[in-house]
Length: 183
Image (cartoon, rainbow, N blue to C red; front, side):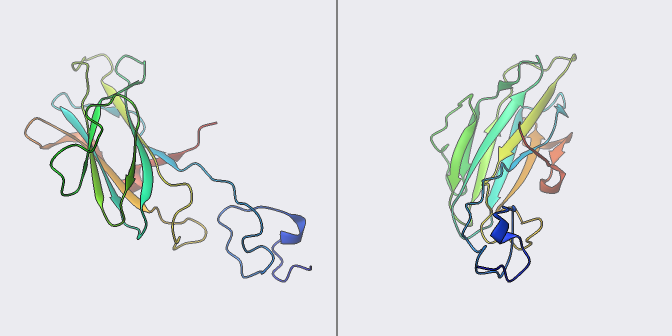
C-alpha cells in the first residue's frame, strides 16, 4: 500500500509523538514508551527547611501513575528521603507511612496528590542539597500539542519550615523542572 501523506510509514520509520491522517501509520506500529522524568536538579536546602512538599495535580480525565523520588545529596550517597502521600481530602497518609523508597501512586482523574518528604540528616553547612525527581506517564492522555504534548500532571515543590512557610530558594514550579533521560 502506498503512503498517502509522505510520512515514511511504508518504510517502517517510527516517530515519537507522530500525528498523521495517513491510514497506514495510524496505530500500525507500536510506539516505544519514552521516559518522562523531570528533575529539580540539586537544590541548596535552606537551613529552616523541615519538610519538602511535592504537589502533583492530575489535570486529565484519566488516572495517572507517577513516581516521586526525593534524594538527599547532603552526604553524596543519594539517599531516598522518607515520605508520606496524601490524596486531596484525606487526613491520613495513603499507604506510604514514611517510606524511604521512591513512591509510586496512581492519582485519580482531576485529583491532587501531596507528598511530604522529611530530611533525615540535620542540616550541615558542607553540602545541604536535595533533588526531587518525578516520573510522569510516558504517553500523555490527549496531547494538545503534537510536538510537545502537555503533561497530564502539574508538579510543584516547596521546602517549608515547621510553621508551614515556604523557604526562600526552595520553591520549584512545574515549568522550572528539567526533563531528563537516564541512559
